[in-house]
Image 1 (tube, rainbow, N blue to C red):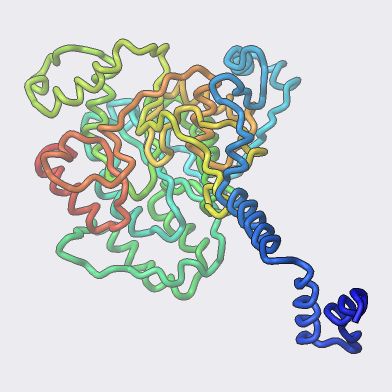
Image 2 (spheres, helix red, strand yellow):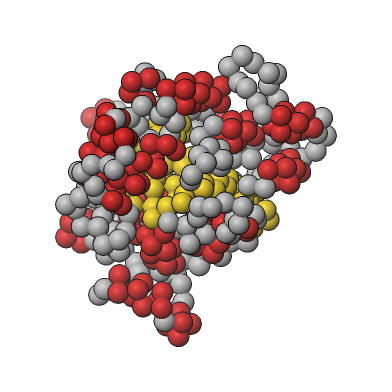
Length: 437
């Protein structure tokens, strides 16, 4: 048999008529016989390498730009801070230069009188607490109103509180809401008991929005903007909070933005604010002899030599974070979204403190800056472009849940991780009894 005949016998196959899946499979096996094993292994390794490189983000990392030398995040101008300062005072420029980030929220629920002057109080409003919450976290809001968010907690300090929410993603999403029975760990006010009693008869018969309308009517502290509440809309919740605060509460000197799963000591927060503003070595009253007060004073004094310029933006600072390029992660960031190898320093969005001048700067800057999907990074970008120095308060505002020990909590302002509202009530009640909340 000649060479041509041997080749024909080796690779010949009968044509397939009306092919089936099995016949197609056999045809592909036949074609693979053209490839020897080393070639197949090489193709497999090449395909695997490309897949791993893509899904692990390796290819993205290779093409990142250097933050230190190349950072130019739109809107790119020679002096972004000067532009924003001009926008704040020049109405003509506002009409000429249209915003590139035109968040313009409407509010379905809007207690606009929250920051108006209260003639029944002898003290101006010193602190506004904006609590980012979700529609069905009714019990968290109930406990916050009675604990660290209590507006009448201090007789000599006026505090205001609002909860910022978006629209319900599903009309029936709160139908499984359960109203807990009275427990030894949770002591509710009569007003809260009455609200929950009426709510317990409504939850199975009405939709999510009706629950929020009822809660707003009862407590008058719900702000609801026109965006769907979801994880990737956190940036909209933060921008809606900035816009609402700018429109209705820009006269309040101190603003705490915080999630509803935080423990907060308003007492320690107020002491820190006073110490930072005064920058005094000693108090005029007996509080200066208190160890806890000296600790908070030391944290304020530690910031004394940093550039201040009348602007304050403080919280738990991440100074050198990198974008995550892992394609399968919910925190994935493409090169189109952000091409640089690290983020500017930013404060975690779960809990941060601003004064009103900083809030106004961030609001105007946000309208002239390309949106970014993560709210805390976006605010960090705004601060960087506006030359706002971030105040590191990592020992006072804890991003991670700090294990509860009374002696440790007496010195902190906030801790993340209190989704269990009964645990939140227990911790706050003990710290209040000890004199630190």
